Structure formats: C-alpha cells, structure tokens
Length: 148
Image (cartoon, rainbow, N blue to C red; front, side, top):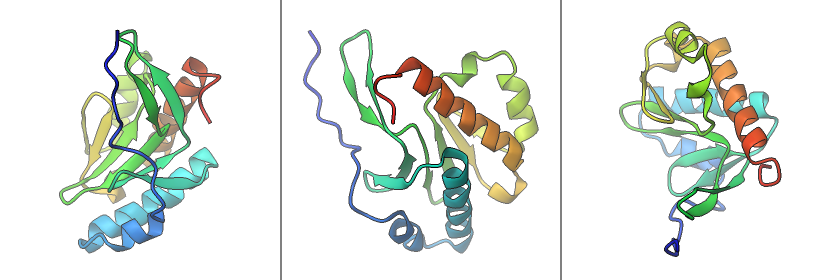
C-alpha cells in the first residue's frame, strides 16, 4: 500500500510576474520574461506559480505503479541563480528524434525531465517550442482524463 504523501509543490496565489520581478540577476529576469511569454504562446494556458519558484502551465494528476500519486503542472520553468530550468514532464525522451532535437537546441544540459539553460538567447526557440509541445501532448495522451 502506498504511503500518504503531502505534496510540497502546489499552486500558489503568487502572480508569475511578481516572482519574475523578484529575480535579482537582470539576465535571469529577462530570460524568465521571455520564457513566460513563449510558454503562454505555445501552450495557450495561463501560468501559475507552483511552490516558491516554479512557473507551471496546465495541470495533471499522475499515479505511478507504486501507488504514489499527485498533481503537478504539464510544463514549466524556474529562474534559478545560475541558469533557467525548463521542466518537460512528458516522456518525450522515448521519441526517436529526441536526441537530434537536443543537438539542434543549443547550449544546455539535460536531466531526466529538466532542461538546464544558461543563456536563453543562445537557444533555438523553434526547437524549444517543439520540445514543449511534445511534452504537453504526451501527458495529455497518457493522462487524457486528468490533464487540463
């Protein structure tokens, strides 16, 4: 039986613009403003601040085979001190041309579902847009009754 888990990362009443205006580094703040506009355009969704520092678009309810379940955003980003982090929650790494897309993206590093970008201006916005669209589409396919 799964253990009851209380999520720490939940939607807040903080406006994304308020979070972004509090970013001290002017470059990180500009990158966050750019990502906010880009993600709005790509998703057609309004952003919400999740936890203390993540800006997410959409929402879905997930349940793992282990029984662990929760709610999180479909796609999002966080302006961090050293770099911007883009959260690609879909299982797009399973797609055959995923590596080729990342090669065309520009300077970055990749975790399991986190894309780390030091300089958004050096990233190919079309490729980033394709990654975001695929991530959202994958989640809406995997969780058709639980993704909004």
